[in-house]
Length: 389
Ligand SMILES: *Cc1c(COP(=O)(O)O)cnc(C)c1O
Image (cartoon, protein in one colour):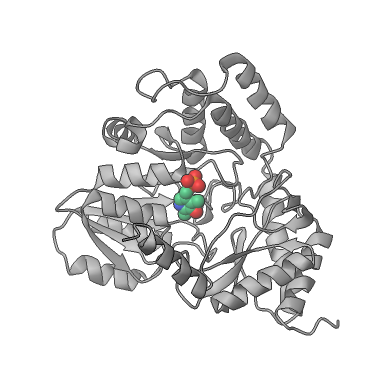
């Protein structure tokens, strides 16, 4: 009896379905020009949408905090892990999102898992969008609430499912900007349904913070609906350029999570250095809203360029999915782009549904027009479009 045989069989199965994953190793910062596996590439795959990870003001402040506090946090947030930098970051997040208070977790993943499992339990219902991020799905599972998945961004379907469970309390949870599709939640109807049926609304702002809304404040700002969501979750690991997740809302909500969210309580705090980078990055977004505008302009420009090659493209976020279908085809397209010097991630099952594999183009505010035009042409070539103009 070989105790590894089950595992080995599953690996072979993944390989047979073109679903085996591996890591690309970078020898450079992951900004617009990066070095992947030894080769220089133009990177169109980073979630650091505003390129704040190498911003001198950010790295200088992180270095100052490193000198002052050292590495590591030395304890959980409720023991010795909370520094002045942590509380300053939380105050800054709360002010940025227009909320009374905020709580920083180790990652967005931990924020979702901790908050959802604390806010809903057995007997409650969680209504969850079919395309929600894996960390939301895992939070739902941990909560042991009844999980009702509604069709992607389909508020009629959501309403039907709520009406079928009259009088049940719980939570409606959705990505703000969907991570693999780049589209935006129907916030007006979602919050209306939540309020009307006595359910909490929770929105995951991972790809919305620093990206959508005139000044990058997120989905609420995009719809001019500031203050309408009960539980706003987000991450510092995407546009903000550092790491860490957060939840913000009323002071009461935050006090509750401090006492109930297990991923917050039972894990060592983030290092003050990481927290400092997040704090300075978030301040930078507020000091320089033109970064957000530039990112938006870049997406509009890329979509126009693709349109000229007959590739329909539209996005109000920093994410543009180009669905190619078969897993093998997506991987081949990614390889062909790499040969042309462009790094665009191919996304496959289980991150997206089987047969809807795609190239996921992620833009940065620092991409130049030349780089964007070059990418559009390379995509057109790889997708077999006519590139004569
Ligand atoms: C990336 C992401 C997360 C997880 O955030 P991390 O900080 O990377 O752990 C959560 N939700 C969504 C929608 C995401 O895209």
